[in-house]
Length: 187
Image (cartoon, rainbow, N blue to C red; front, side, top):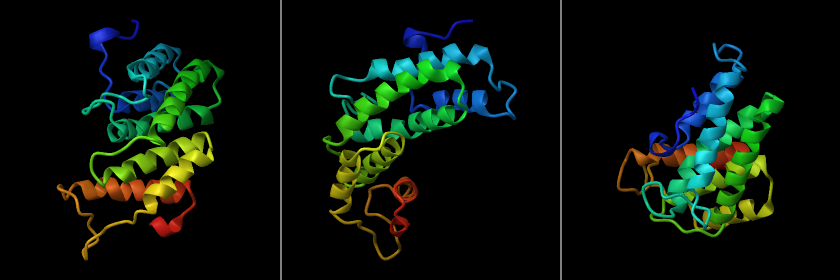
């Protein structure tokens, strides 16, 4: 049956699209290269592009929020990366949709602000992911701007944030930046 549309389709953070791409791309999957997944992937990708505000940001928790939008980039950029590696021409329409989404988001993230200091690292990780797919100095320059403000950690290596669970998010962001920007000092 065709993919769901309208209110039946929830955006989330992109995990559904990433799971579809992984299922399609993995030789171990019972859905490996299944034609039936293609419309689902295309519709899911399009739903993210359609949800972007004029400013290139999503209303994902907060309205037109750079950090909330940056959280979505992790799965969406991963889906594009994995789908590119498979070199299946049937995925080009979906890849083009994701490309439009990520480039619009990237432009918003190089100028957008944050709600709390820890969100700098979520935005930086998203920019590193976009830069890995579409290299541009403006993405790295913005990352360097945020890094130039310093990384704040207490004596136990935790970040000064309201939620101690948020340290995992920040650590993941630094690992992502270290890996994608070839900056092992961020580890």
